[in-house]
Length: 218
Image (tube, rainbow, N blue to C red; front, side):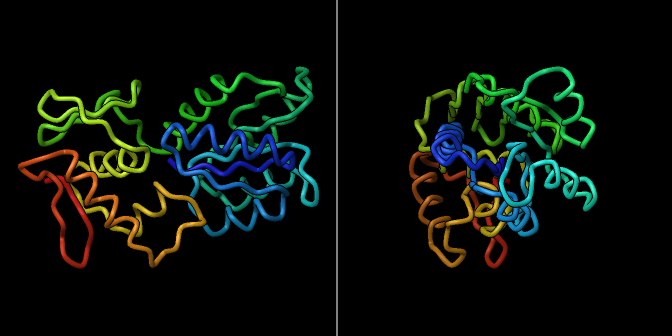
C-alpha cells in the first residue's frame, strides 16, 4: 500500500510516516497543500492522510480537487476540531474518514488499513501460494510451515507477488507500491531485495524471473 501524509507540522508528519513505514507501507510526505497536489498528480496513492488546515492550498481544497479529478485515493482527514459539525463538513467535501487530533497511532493505522482495503480489492487475512503463506495481521511469513523472518521491504515485495496470483509484477510496479518517491527509478534495489527474499525463502525457488517483464510466483 502507498500512502501520502499531507501535514504541515513536520515533526508529526515525519512521526506518522516513520510509524507507517514500520507497518511495511510505502509513505511519502508533503508539508503543504501545493506539494500534496503535485504528488497526487504523479503517483497512484491508496490512502491520503490529509491535515485539514494545510498552509498554501487548504486541505479542503485538496480534498475537493481529489474528488473533481476522480483520483482513486481514499482520504483520511485530520483536524484539531473534532465536533460533529466539523466532521460532517469534512465528510461532505469528499473525505472517506475523519480523525480528530490528538489521536492514538494504533487507531490511525487501523483506519489507514481499512481505507486501503476499500481502495482496491480486499486481501484475505492470509495470502498463500506455492507453499508460501503471508499472515497480514501478525506480519509473518511461513514457507512450508516454517517461519521466515523478513525485513519490511522484503515483506512488501512478497505481498505484491502473492497478491498478483501468478501474474507478472514488473520492477516498476514494485518500486511504485513498496518504496517511496525518494527511490531512484534506475536503482538495483528491487533486484537486491529480490535476491535477499529468494535466499530467505530457500530452495526450491518459488519466485520466477520473467525476462524483460518482471517477477511472479507461478
